[in-house]
Structures are given as structure tokens and as C-alpha cells.
Amino acid sequence: MAKQLWNKGFEPDQLIENFTVGKDRELDLRLARYDVQGSMAHIRMLRKIGLLTEEELSLLLPALQEIADSIERGEFTIEDGVEDVHSQVEFLLTSRLGDVGKKIHSGRSRNDQVLVDLKLFFRDELRDIAKAVDRLFNCLQDLSEKHRDKLMPGYTHLQIAMPSSFGLWFGAYAESLADDMQMVVAAYNIANQNPLGSAAGYGSSFPLDRELTTELLDFAKPHYNVVAAQMSRGKTERAVASAVAAVASTLGHLAMDVCMWMCNNFGFVSFPDELTTGSSIMPHKKNPDVFEIMRGKCNRLQSLPNELTILTANLPLGYNRDLQLMKDIVFPATTELIECIDMACFMLGQIRIKDGILDDSLYDYIFTVEDVNRLVLDGVPFRDAYRKVGMEVQNGQYHPTRNVNHTHLGSIGNPANDRIASKMKEIMSRIL
Image 1 (cartoon, rainbow, N blue to C red):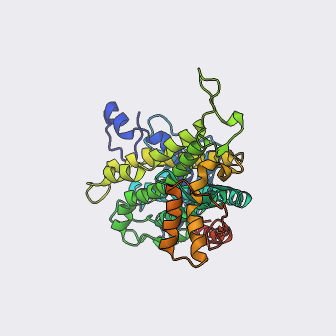
Image 2: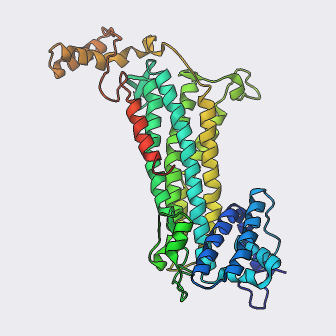
Image 3: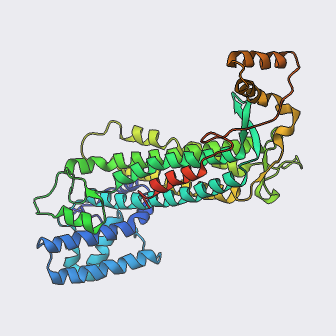
């Protein structure tokens, strides 16, 4: 027999039940700790406004704590026939405490209950993403410093262009992650608002103390307007998706670079054999499968904002069951992003960099700009210097000096890693 909090004396058709519940029982397990956390704050507020007695509160809080402990031990399950995590928690309370367990739902709806669960969940997920990004950032900064003097080709249009360095390459991705963290912090700020007390989206006739639950749940502020609180379902997920996509974009580009630099035609980087894969018929192959899978996953993660936008684009005001489907999209995505970040840290920790790349005559022309600039520094007008070196190239008379002397902020000789570290530290301080 199905157990629904909204049961009115009839059972829905089993086919309807299966279709509408979908994967909710499985996904809701990730919300269980937050559902209990929200309920504990809610009943403290109910006691303050007189809807619970002190005796009832003293029964409910320990019972909820027992459920919380079972969740942390991995023993909590959503039973067959129970619709969702909210139902499971309330049914457990009722089975242990009787009618007093039914009182925890006064003054709220499953709409604001799931909203508060999701807000708390996304806050933690975004913090976990921030911690993972910080690990990768530090790895990239260390590599940038370690290899700051090792030159490599810089490309435009996939043609050799100007000298670059591994210090710049690693450092560029570190600073890009710092910019991505702005998106993560923005999503965190949107999630860090309390919707509890908005009920079904239109408030309650009970004198709810929404400021108290905001304080108890450590939200920065409440969603003030109850309709706006309900409207945040979908908006919060889209903000999280945009943050995930931003980090995934940077990581996907990095993975593509590594795949290319590992190619025999480049050979700029390599990894221990045990970190590569082989071919079933070509015994020489050492494939960058880890970075190819990482690239593919990150490309897929970048579709999240579009998928959520399409899902929510034409929904009318108020709660609609379509919103349930967002959990299927976002929940696995945050986990997958962190797994990709951690794998990147593991792999980059064992990367090998080729020395003396620009000594190869293949890269002679990469120094043309350096020689044009050298002439300009000696007093030759830029256009004349450009033409002189250009004619030497055309006539096969160009001989590079191979001198690289970049000193300005953010250049080969001054990658500004300390400034980038300060930038990231300030951004991280807003979420960690």
C-alpha cells in the first residue's frame, strides 16, 4: 500500500504512481540529511509561535536526531510505497511517536520543504565544488612555478605564432578557474536564501517566524516574497548549472590541450605508461583516454543550463511537477564535475614536460615577432622592422636570435602567479 502525505482515502493507479515518482526515491536519499535539518529548524520555530508544546518538542527533536544519525550511518532508506524523503521522515516519526509526529508539517508545504532541502543541498555541493576547484588551482599554480622557464609554442589558428611557456599555460588555466569561481559564488549566493515559510508558494495564515528559521539554518537571508521563494525553484538550479558549466568549460579545454600535446606530432607532454591505455592491434599506442573521457564529460556538463532552460521555459507561475525532473539532471552533474576535477589533479600530478621544444628548427619562425620588437627597441620604426623581418622570411634568409625577454605583468618572465593566488583567495573567502 502506497503512503502519501496527501492521501485522501484512495490509491492512485500503480502505473501513474511509477511514472510520476520516477527516480525520486533514489535521488531523495541525497536530500535526507537536509530534510531532517530543515524539519528540526521548523519545529523549533513552531514551538516559539505556540504550535508545539515544549514537551512535544522534547519528543520530536531526539527522534529527528535518531533519524539524522541513521542517515549518517548509511542505514536510512525510503521504503517501497513511500513517495519521497519527506514522507519517509514523517512516517518514521509517526510510527515512533504517534500523532505528535504528524504535527511537524504544520505551517509548511512539501513545496517549501523540498525547496529548503534543495537550497541546503546545493550550498554543500557548491562548497564541495569550490574545494575541488581550489585543489586543482593549487596544482596548476605549482606546475606553473615549476615549469615557468620552459618554453613552448604559442598558436593562433593552430599555426605557430609566438613563444609561450608552460608557466603561462598552467597559470592561464589557474586564473580561468578563478573566474569560474565567480559563477560558483554567484550560484551559492542564490542558493543561500531561505524559502521556508512560503508554504505552497503563497504563505500561511500561521504567524510563522521566518527570520528564526533563516538564522537556525544559517541562510544569509530569507526569500522575502513568498511567491518569489517558490519561483526560485528552477532559478537556483539554473544558477548551479551555469556554475558547473563554467568550470567544465575550463576543464574541457585543458583536457583537449593535453590530448593534443600528447599527440606524437607535438610530444610536448607525456605520462607514465600505467596512466595511458593501448590498442588491441597497434602495440605502440599510448592513448590519452582519461583526458578524452574528461573532455567528453565536460562537454556534456556544458549542456546543463540549456537543458534546464528548456525544461522550465514555458511553466506557469507556481509549482508544477515538471520541476521534479531537474533533480535527474543536476544531482549527477555536481558529482561528475568533482570526479573530473579530482582526476585532473591526479593526472597532472604525474605529468612530464619535454625540455628544449623551441630548439627545433621547426619553430624558427616563432621568433619573428621577438626580432621585430628587438629592431624597434633599437630605434627602427615598427612597420620598417616588420617589413625587414618579413622579407627575410620570404627570401629564406631569416635566422632567429632565439632570445625571449618578456617582463611585463602576466608575461613569460612575470606570470603573476602571486597576484592570481590573491585573486582566487579573495573569491574563495566568499564561499569557504
